[in-house]
Image (tube, rainbow, N blue to C red; front, top):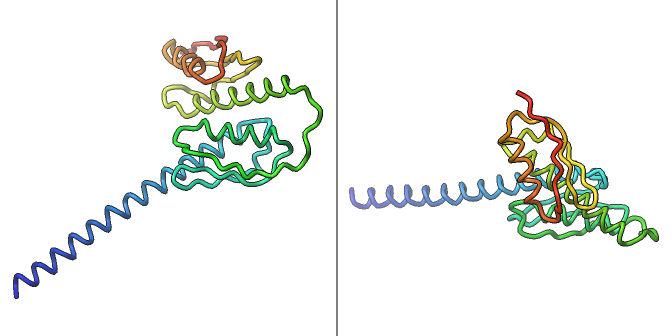
Length: 183
């Protein structure tokens, strides 16, 4: 009888531990998705070319779905590219609706503007998410894929790190340093 009771108790304990491990993994996956969702919302919010209040994000297992409405197909593509560039994003399902047809703008200028906007947003987001750089004190300007960093940092090392973050961003041709080191 004692063996049977012990077997039942052991079975219950092992089953509880297995269930607990599964629940912990589900919690971690949900937390990671929430983190990605927050980064996506922030990235869209920081981009001045998009009305992020009309764009909704939903994340499941690292896959981001964009819904809502934008003014042009350029805005739709920009939103998708910005979110796709974030760490942890596996894929983007861009279901944004275009509300207005594109005007007859010069395609080359439009492509440059999109690239510059994307670069500015990615650099600013990377600076904000870096624990070693005070990204809120750094302004990012981009023209023709040349990034200009302005503002203040607390050390030479922080300035060098901010410059390297910008230089290591896709589509950046050059970085202009206008950062001041303040003690």
